[in-house]
Amino acid sequence: MSGKEFLKSVDQVFDNAAKVLNLSVSLANQIKAPNATYKVNFGVRIKNKISTFTGFRCVHSDHLEPVKGGIRFSLHADQAEVEALAALMTYKCALVDIPFGGSKGALIINPNAYNKYDLERITRRFSQELIKRDLINPSQNVPAPDMGTGEREMAWIADEYRRLNPVDINAFACVTGKPINKHGIRGRAEATGRGVQYAIKEFFRHKKDMKIAKIEGSLEGKTVIVQGLGNVGYHAAKFLSEEDGVKVIGVSERDGAIYDKKGINIQKLKNHILNTGSVKKYKGYINTDLLTNQCDILIPAALEGVINKSNAKKIKAKLIVEAANGPITYEADQILAKEKLIIPDLYANAGGVTVSYFEWVKNLSHIRFGRLHKRGEENKILNLISSVEEITGRKLNLSNKENIIKGSDEIDLVRSGLDDTMRSAYIAMSYRMHSKNKIKDLRTSAMSIALEKIALSYQTLGL
Image 1 (cartoon, one colour):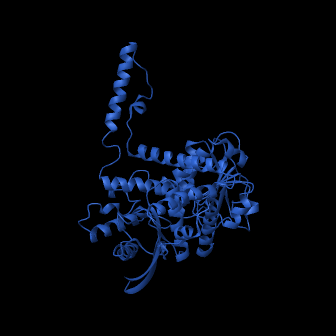
Image 2 (cartoon, one colour; image 1 turned 135 degrees about the vertical axis):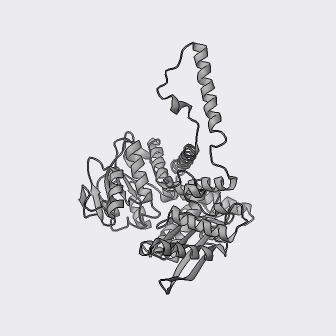
Image 3 (tube, one colour; image 1 turned 180 degrees about the vertical axis):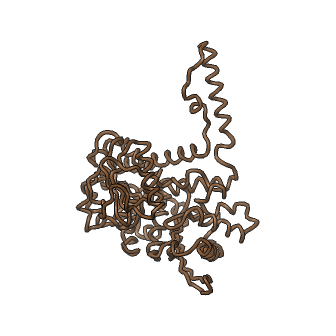
């Protein structure tokens, strides 16, 4: 799917929700249109030759600041795609009550075509172009990892900002998704995949939604196919299979797929991909796509538009969870929504920005979560156990005593906050879908909730 088609799909979902809310045309146009899109061209000398690179940073809405959104490195990036992703960030943050506006960035580059040294120089030069325009700034615009970027690139960007702003005490809050040893937060790398897991677990607490999807029973034992085993797909599949008893029967990648009715060991498959660069030669390899295979839950976790009008009617999964941004085109969504339940990207992959928010707060407060109260919690529980033993005159035989008395550290608090965020947002979406006659699906419900909050924010500002 091209960037223009992706943007059109996002806008069509927006228009549907705006009609449901009866938003005025003028206010709807203000919310929908990106505030500004910056295109930068810059040169970097590589091997005695100047190479010119093109990058983008779109600020979709600054009704709340800072604005938030990842930076991707991709040869296929373009302005329309960046604007579509920035718009999704605006709506996503509003839906899950994260106090950010929406933004997104991209550099047109294949990161695998450069060695680490050259990629660092390119990243730092791109960062300089954005920093001097305040498009990277702790209080105005805070990027994060996206496709083709990760902790390493975020560390380079943070260091470049700190170098150019040496007296800014909050310099490391200029970007999230950093390594732990560079002021990152525990649980950020897994956050989007963990959020997908929490979204699916919450779905199974809503019997009306399960009835729409024609799914019965509990999550345990359900069959799952994952399309894309990158950061998001890998963590979602790993957590669901290892912690919730789900059977991941299929994994699709760009060079083929792995299929096993008995279930795939996700960690072993990931290790194979890391060691060989491919899914080939792994047990169960087939040279085909698994999107249309039979399963309970389908998790598209790779690119935009993989499910479109050409294959929508062939999808057999009962529940589709959009771990990627825009994996289902608008036309395909109209086909699928008639008989299947779709958990939309607007909500399903909000785990990343949620934990990014936690990291940003941590950087501004300059203290690790849990540091002040972990031992206090443990002492309270120990005192409670001692009191019970004194009253009963018996020593409690607690086989898991260490787990019982353990206070919350950073990873526990991050996961707790993420779980609460995903639960609350799903409850709101589901309730609205079942209580409003004009809303027939979770996507429209999610977008209408987001737009309602953004519209109120603009009205409060006097627009």
